[in-house]
Every structure is written in C-alpha cells, then in structure tokens.
Length: 551
Image (cartoon, rainbow, N blue to C red):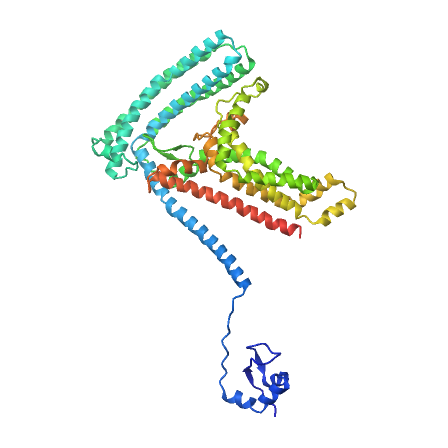
C-alpha cells in the first residue's frame, strides 16, 4: 500500500539538498545499493523520527566579498552625504533667528532712518564715480581745455553733497551709540572683542535719541533742496565735448542725475513716515538673506547678509566659463570621436585630459600674472578702441576667472561628451551612409542629435565643476562684494565680483563660532550644496533618458 511521507533527505543524488521530497519518488531516485539499504526501514524512520532540517553552512565566495565591498562603499557615501546635510542644517539654520534679532535692532536703534538719508548720499557718490570714469576715458580724446572745464564741473558736482554727507555722519553717530547700548542691555553683542568696549559705555536715552534723529527730517529736506538747485545750475552749463562718444556718455549720465533729483522728495516723505516701533515680520530674516543685495560684515554700522551679490558673481563666472568651455569641449569630442586619425586621437586625448591634473592654485597664479594683465593691456590698445567698455582698470574680474575655469571644465566636458558620442549605435551611422549622407551630414544630423542628452549631461557636470571651484575664483575674480553695473552691457563681465565659494574660503577662518556671521557662511554653503545637488540630479536624469533613447 502506497503511503505518502514527506521528509528532508540530503542523500539523494538528484533531489537538491534540504528539499522536501515524496518518499516514493525519493526511493525511486536513489541508486540501487542505497535503495536496498533504506527501502525496508524508510517508513519506520519517517514515522518515528522528528523532522529536523539540517543547518545550512554559508560559505563566502569571492563574488560575495566583492559585493559586500562595493555595497559598503555605497553605504558609506550615503551616510557621509546625510551627515553633511545634517551638519549644514544644524550649523546654519540658527542664522534666521539671529538675523531677525539683528534686523529688529537695526530699526529700533534708528539705523534704518539714517540709512534712508545714506541711500541718497550713496546715490550721489555713485554719480560722482561715474563722472570721474567718464573724465578718465576722455583724457585720450579731448583737448586740455575741455578736460580742465570737465574737471571743474566734476569737482563742483562732488562738492554739492558735502552738507548731506555731514548730516548723515552726525545722525549716524547717534544711532550707533543707541544700537550699542541696546545690544549691551540685551546681552546680544555679536561682535568678537567689542564686549569690553561696550561694558563702560554710558547709558543712552532711547526716546530722546530717536526724537533727535527724527528732527533731521526737516534738515534733510532743506539740504536736498539746496543741493538740487546747485546740480541743476551745473547741468545748465555743461562742458562741451569734441568727441561724440564722450558726449553720448555724458548725456546718459545727465539723465541719471535728473532721475536722482526726482527721487529726493520721495526720500523726504520716507523719513517723515518712518516709525521705530513698526513690527518687523519674521519672513524678513529669510527674504533678507535670499534676496538681499548687500553682504557687509564686521561693520561699525550694520552687518548685512544678502546672498544675491555672491550668487550673481558665481552665475556670471559660470556663464563665461561655459561660453568658452562648451564649444571647445564638445567640438574637440566630436573631432576626436568621429574625424581624427588614430595617431591624432593618441595625441589629443591625453593632453586634453592632462589639464585636469593641473592644480587649481597654479591656474590661479597663471591668471593673476598672465591672463589678467594681458586682458588689461589689450583693452588699452588702439585696436580695441571701438569697444565701448574698454579700457578696463581691473585685471582681476569675471572674465579672467571665467576663462581659467573654462580651462578646468574642458576635460570634464570633453571626456563625457566623447563617451556619449561613442555610445551611439554603429547602425545609425551605417544607415546614414547607406542613404547617401557624407560624414559631416552624418555627424550633424544623426550622431550629435542621438547623443544630445549625453552631451547636455556633460555640460551640466562641467557646470557643477565650475560653480564649486574655490581657489581660482578666490585669486582671480577680484573679490568685490557688489552686483556689477549691468548698464555697461558686456562691460559688466569685466568687473570684479565675489562668489559663494570664495566668500566661504575667505571668511570662515576669521569668524567666531556660533555668531551670526558664522551661521551665515553655513547658509551660503547650504545654498551652494543644494545648487550642486540639483545640477547633478539633472545630469543623472538626462543620462537615464539618453540611455533609453538609443536602446
């Protein structure tokens, strides 16, 4: 009689070890000697013995070690990335609370009131600087008599704001004294080394100081009215220029002066409506950082932490770098991949990739000593007199830093773009040739479009390489924390700027741990970290799409 039993049997030659087998099937699968030995007692063994599965013995093989090695590396990378993110958030997130207290103290002490007047004085100073630049550029085109009259006009315009500057200086001293006293009372002195100086400061009557500041509204109205009359009198008798270009620049400057005079009554109205007790909303701490146009630290007046000048500087340097690196990198990749002879490939490719091995500090020295000086000398040459923003006075500027970063980005773009071009299936080219297309038509209409996603991802990774570079921009960008004057058109790319990476490298070693300046630098690092992650994420998405598009 057939009885069905199930057991674990590891001696079967055909059945796999530890597999649950049918008794009858197992006996049929056994070799004859083993079958005779177990046939007469199989049922008894199964019926009386408990079914216990043998413990498996796991032996590590070479592929297991390799798998564990690479898996642990990936895990370490994920953990490190998470720790970096947590560290940046932990050190930088407290900035917003400190910045909010900083802005509220700025209003309460009357610094905001004084800055309304200071903005008018700074606008006048900017017009004076523009007039001086026009005078310098006119030295090679105007006669000595014209230059003498122009110099008198420029001096008179600059002197017209003396009373305004004096008013701002006197009001500023009162506001600073009140700010220091309020900060000392609140125990919120965030400037290293200043606490001892404030400890002996005399107490200041807040209400009396604010009242004295607000009394300057009428004084400002009288001074601005007198200044406007002087400036309009100067504009009625402007210097007469012989050069058409100089006259055109001066006319443009005159329009800016008229606009400046038109906003002076509005400034008086702002002073009259200013209120020291007006609440400061919490979002000002965030918007002041993300959209602020000033980065001023260790100032006797007021510290500002606006990322816009740094972000604009990084973007402008990246634009110049990509404008130079993308054509050279992609064109070189197309030539090496599709046109060059084998001997040319062996010569060009190693040399291009060798550029990546040059230390960035060496490139920075090269930019200071050679590139920047060469650009400045060329701008002073008569061959480029037709360029509106030449000659330039600064050898360290956006273009100098961008051209060196382009040299660093070319190997990245070249290597990745060449890989993308080589991954195009050969059937695409063969089909194009079969239809009668020549080599250039095949490259332009078949190979490049098929590898376009890979080329774009190469450009994005090159952008990530450029925007994260520190040493070159720190040495060659000029390190002026200000938004360039875009009214000069392309001349803005020949002005000095500062970048996010440069400001971190320059100021991190000088700040007090836990101060608002310290946390502001970490917030800049967090923004830079987010931008870099976004660029690399976009590049990875394009790579995935590229792989799918060509099968």
